[in-house]
Image (cartoon, rainbow, N blue to C red; front, side, top):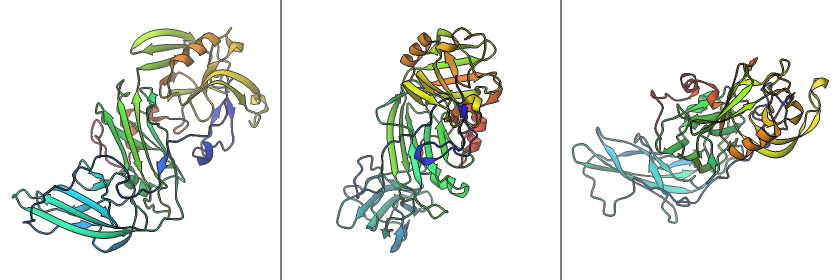
Length: 423
């Protein structure tokens, strides 16, 4: 029993996938996001301050640097970065940023050297002084100083979310998932993407992909993450101006771990699930997928949520034949539309032979319990051979596209093989 159609389905308070024609069997999900910071005092965020001011700076011997923001600028967003026009061959060697009344701001230079990014949002309505030192290829040293004032706190902000939490361990297919309401306009996506920072250890290149309406963006590598990877994310949007008159609501940060490799592969042709742990086949499970009138989605999905016990209530389905209220055990969400892996004792007699569900992956009680105990959020499941393909944005669909197709959704050019960290 496993699928319903929910008119105007919402993803929690953000209503991010309301435009999708979603089908499934379970309840709607109110998302939980990592917390954030809307603005911070100077130096309030601990972190790298590279490059920092030298203890005893040498006297500048080259031309004076022109900084951005320009001296005397007012109304700057709290997402402001510090940059300078450099002499030919010049490289920034030190940046300091201080707020009136004291307190230095920590930050880090972009890997391409284009700007220095504060490690936390600046304070609203505050005057700052920036000093940048650069060394020229001819051995000269140049310096520039600029004072600017940030804007007052804006009244209109976007809603945002990050599905990643500190100190959690995820599956190898866990994408970095950001959400926005309203969606980010196309002309703003490149600027927003420049403020979405991801770093992995060990290093693995990656890319961002935007869904068409701009309500979601996913970050992934060309292949699944290496087991044991640490992923550090900063979605640095607090106070960032958008073309629709809104501003980013807050900065969100998280550092999480990737655990062992655990993959589920379902083939409608034989109605079996093959389960692999660290590359080795560990279990073969008979399944019943969605019947032809309510087919399961084909594609690669990931486990988004787990509930040992829940109730599927589809009484708002426009088709009376698909309305029911059923208690479910060992449910693992795969789509926002309500497709799950779950225990279905009522279909055990046909599992492995016939599709009878409303779209979910039905397994026996014993197999559902075993899977539930083994899986983590972010573990991948690939379903093939059904009558429909997974809809973009109906769940964390980052892996439903090939790498070449995925990078076409980036708002910025992606180097062959993926980009390294921007910060």
